[in-house]
Length: 541
Image (cartoon, rainbow, N blue to C red):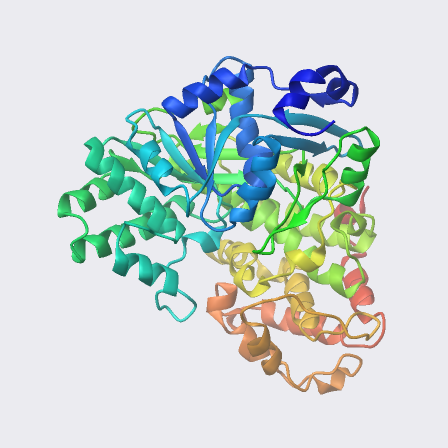
C-alpha cells in the first residue's frame, strides 16, 4: 500500500490488516466545508503538528464533534509541503511508540489543505478574511517568533518585512501580521492566535512580535492606528498561552522497517533544503499534554473533548513551570551531560544505568517536588512518575543526550536556578542539595570536551560554549591540580544560573564535585556513584 486517498479507500482491509486505524469521517465532505469556510489555520507543518495537533482534530472529526479540518501552512521549510504533504494527499501515518515496545498506527487525515506561504499568500489572505475563522495556531519553534538576533538588532528578514510592508511578508511574524491586517480590513473580525510551541509564555512572545510588526507598519503608513488598536485588543485579537509536552523525535529506521515489512511503501525519510529530517510517518511517544488558556473571541473547536486542558492563563503558566523547572526538563539536562561523558547515545539506554537513574530520581523526587509548582489540573508526582517509569525508559524513543545537551547555557537558569531560588525564598537548606550541584558540576566537566575515559568528545552547540570554555582554560581532565578556581567567575553569573551561586553554599559543592570529576579515567562515574550511593530513595527499583 501507498499512503494516499485512493489506497486508503480501495485497500482499507489491507491497511487494517497491517494494524492501521483509518479515519472515521467523510474526508471529502470535511475538505469541501473547510475549503469554503475554514475555522483553523496552522503554521509550522512539522512533526509535533502532524503527530499531536492534527491528531486532536481528527478525534473530533471521528466523533462528529467537528465538521472541518485544518489548513496547514509553512513559512520556512517549503519542502515539507511539496515533498511530505502533496505526494501523500496531506495524509500522515502516525506511529505511537508504546513503552512496552509495541506500536500503534493511525492515518491522520484532518489536514485537508496545505499551503506554502511564499506562493500561497493569496489563499492565506482569503482564509483570513473568512468571518468564521476561529484560530491560527503555530508550532514554529521558539526561534520563529524572534525579530532580533543575539545582538539585539532586527534580523534582515524582520527588518525587510517592516520596511516593505504587508504585500509580500517572509518572516512568520510578518505573515501573521499581514493576515491580521487582511482580517481587520474585511470587518475587524475577532480571532485567536495560539502559540503551541514548547517555550515559556509563548502567547506573550507571539503577541509581542506581531505587535512590533504592526506598529512598524503603522509608523510607515502601511496601516492606520485603528489596525494597531485591533491587534492590541485581546477581545478582538487574543493570544492565548499554552503548555505542550509530547516528544516527536526524528523518524526511526526500525519504525520505517516495520512499516515496510507490513507492506506499507514509500515511507523513507527525506532531508529538506532547510535540513529538516522528516518522513511521511511520524513516530512519537504515547504521553501527551496540551494546556491552553481558554481565550477564543470567535469561538473554538471543543478541544477539551479531545483531551486538551482548557483553563486560565495562570494555570497554563503553573503547568509549564511544573514541567520545565521540576518534573521533566531538569532531568533531561542532568542526564544528557552525564550521558555524553559516559558514552551513551540514547536516553533510554541511560535509564538502565543505576547511577544516572539515582541522579534524576533525587533531582525530581527529593530536591524538586518539595518546591514544585502545582498547577492543580495535573498532579506533579504522577507526572514525574510517568516521566521516570514510562517516558524516559521507552526503548522506542530514539532521543540522544547529545541533542538534549544543545544550548545548555540557555536552560540551566530555568531548569535548576528556579529551584534554587525557591529554596532561598522559602528559607530551605541549600546544603541539602546534591543532585543540582552534581548536574551543574557535570555540565562544567562536559564543557572540557573529554569523556570519562579521557578521550576527546564533541560538545553540542551552545551560544556560550566558546566563552565558557575560555574561562575553563588551563583545567585538564586527569589532573585535578590544574583547577585553580576557574569556576568562580562562571558560577557568579546570575544571567546564566538565575542567581549568583558564589553567594550560596552551592558554589563550594559544585567545585568539590568538579574537582573530583577531574581525577582521571572513571572519575566522573566514581563521583556520581559516591555522591548518591547512600540514598535509599534514589537507589530503589
